[in-house]
Image 1 (cartoon, rainbow, N blue to C red):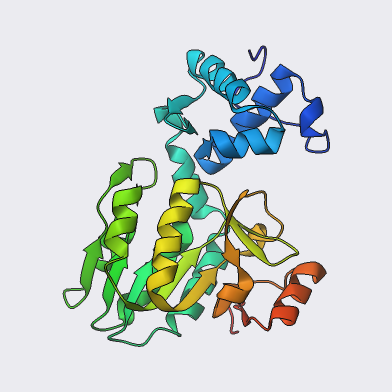
Image 2: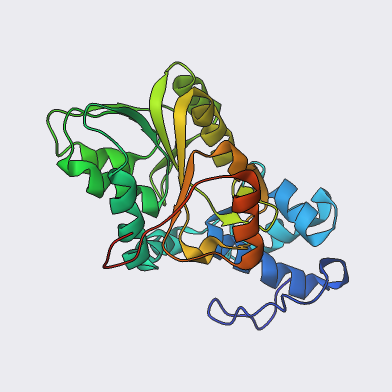
Length: 277
């Protein structure tokens, strides 16, 4: 159980091997993970900390008993008081996200059919697409629907399923099944991290399943990743850059990631904030 650790005092030692963490240190890092991501699965945390799923469940229960986390089936999320975390993410790297969004929007022709993923960058892309005409959009993000519905000539389909209140994402098997019924020209996806091997990763296993369903029905796949995602800490594999038609960012990636793009001949588009490409 945590002692003497306030919500603003989280500073886990990232260099300490997970297997050597004591209970208090591990629970502090669990809090940090969930606060950054909004949700973390038991499976992912068990792998990350190199402990059993039963140990993680006990940790989550203790943190929940202290109102620091909320227990969900298969994982843990933020208490209601932490729903502002998504609003904070909207303003983080906002200029980079707008630059990426504008560059991706240039690749989408009017009249196109497309899937738009969840996340703050996807909301920026939705804003950038408002100058288009006659788009046919499938999404699992209520925030994207709210933006695009400003246009009377857009045809918008929202996946059904469980709504995650903090970020207005629709997740779960029902959402995946809905998306599988379409065939779309473009897919626009956000990711949590890209590593030196070229793997694209995200935070929530359930979100990844929905994204995988969408990737399977889209002819062209564009991924958006601002530079904070280079070598990020996401743990759930979404795919590999070789599966992307293009990856859009706002800064040159580290050498290892740049080599992966060159090796796999994946198009990397760099959009300069406040400028050109």
